[in-house]
Image 1 (cartoon, one colour):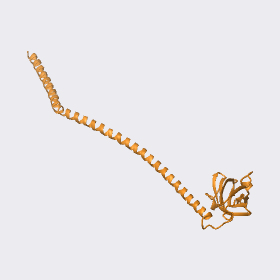
Image 2 (tube, rainbow, N blue to C red):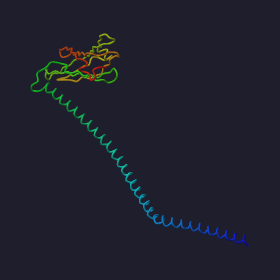
Image 3 (cartoon, one colour):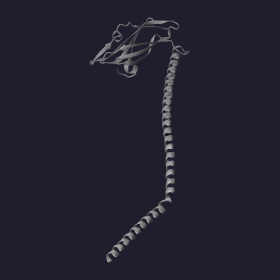
Image 4 (cartoon, rainbow, N blue to C red):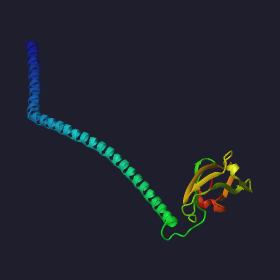
Length: 232
């Protein structure tokens, strides 16, 4: 009898403990729900707002990147166009300078105050074409025989150093197989052509031999004064 009572008492104790445990679980669930549930709508709204702002900012960033790319291309185009304009202006300035030089040259030749001059080598210029090859321009003038035609031939000789020794290149060395260059003019003429210099030759002076109109000229010009680079 005593044993049965003890067994029943233990059963009630365990049942009570189980009820208390279940009640505590229910209390914890109720507290968590009452605490977190009111905040869920606020958090959800904030999350949606953040997502919306992120999308808006991303759109603005994409737009700015597109504008940056467009401006970069526009800047490149502007710089290219500006360079073209600057190059064109430089060419025009060069042309104007050349025209003014030609005008002054013509005025000296046939202007009201021009003095009659016999056949003369007005200028000589050499410009490089390729390694060892040079283009020359010789300007001949005369105003003594006004209205008359002056005819003749021109040859070049170039003096310099080769192998540590003085050397002279004759017309036949400069332009093999070519006859002397002919000219025929009233007041002036530009004579152009090309000559070849051998490897190892350093030019120092150019001699211009002109024969025509009863005149024989042999004028000398320093290489550094008439060439664009000064050396070969």
